[in-house]
Image (cartoon, rainbow, N blue to C red):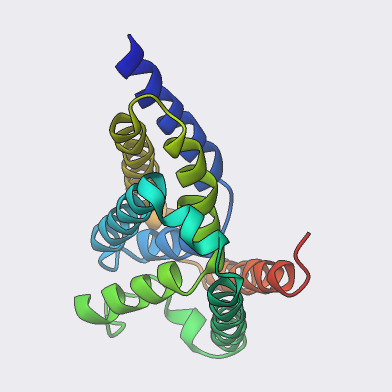
Length: 203
């Protein structure tokens, strides 16, 4: 029972943070809608989450808290990346790229390109480190069985990202209209800018 308690604590804490709308979730959702290596993108996200939660749970959280300069550098790198990604999404919404949406003749990005972008969206977003290393890791470090806590947190990531990728893919046949893709790109751009703004002026 003690082990199950640590596991469920990890699952619930991670689920509460991971399910918040963020850059990582938006990217996996769009990849799922396009059916463009969406499962590979989900696997990258959940693997990174599991590694970061494990590192945070077993001591990296306290290390980062003692070195604010490292977090500051990561924060501004993430801001630049998020703004750049938002501008690309706006360009797609205003140009012809958004019109091809689910067109089967549209050139597809390679798996490597999607994986590299997924890594950038994940690892250049300071919120990922704050959620996994600091917040989840700090809670996990206080558990009686931290290993099971980390396993529970990783399980929440697996459930969420697979659900996001597969659920979006099921909606794909209904999302072939050009207007839909314009709205998606505008929504992604707005979300990216909101996240970037929250990093510029953290609460």
